[in-house]
Amino acid sequence: MPCSTSNLGAGFDCIGLALDRYLEATYEPDDGPLTVERSGTLDGLAVGAGNDALVAALAERLAWRNVIAGGRLRVHSAIPVGRGLGSSAAARVAGFALGAVALGEKFDPIEAWVHATSAEGHPDNAAPCVLGGLVAVVPIPPRERSFGMRLLPLPLSPAIGWSYAAPAAEMPTERARAALPPHLERAVAVDALRRMPALLRGLETADADLLATGFADSLHVPFRLPLIAGGERALHAAIEAGAWAATISGSGSGLIAAGPRRGGAAIAAAMAAAFREGLGGAPGSDDGVVAFEVSPDLEGAQILPA
Image (cartoon, rainbow, N blue to C red; front, top):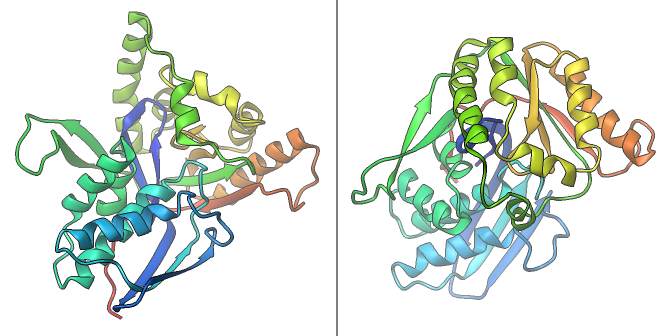
């Protein structure tokens, strides 16, 4: 399952992009109790943390056929947890997929997306996770299996390079949501609407000016950025290193930057250095800062042969 970045500035709660950091899981069902082996970014997470989303999704999918989850579950993830790359959405989709396969049924991406959206409370991470690529979630008249929304794949220029960085501190979704004001002035809403066409066209054509306009947001970034220690410094560092635009990835604490295809590693390193500078750390120090160049994943959720 690929990770995903969402919002991308003006695409608040409706635009997501699948990226090539993955969660991999295998399930061997039997009649015994369920044992779970976790590795990678999930290693050492406390019981009750977001990694249990996969177990919950597996159990729920099996319960559709009155089957109790038992056996051996192995999960490895390269997706940072709680840092704006859709780790819980990937886990929910993976658990749902494993449950379907264990029952001998076909994996249905739309069913998986509906399940993950119901549990997550927002659709824009699970959508690219199941479909791959750049995806918008748009409202439609309610119909069976539609959840009142439609997944709309969008064109994405291959000329855009992507960079990610995050501080050590996680950003709980609940805290990020609580930071948003209950009401906004009309002028703020109008400003956000005007930026959305720039975002979409910029992503399609790799237009640096349009991306800079589209990544600038007035709905969520101004309220969430102060919660990310060193976040504003890291955004400026990305631009100084050659990025065309940078913003919060999802609800944070990670940041995502778009720029030329070449130079993504340097942009990620610049953001990481800015985070470390805010902490008083030295480059390369073991401070929990993560940074890497990423590429779009165009395949989405994959069921691989055993």
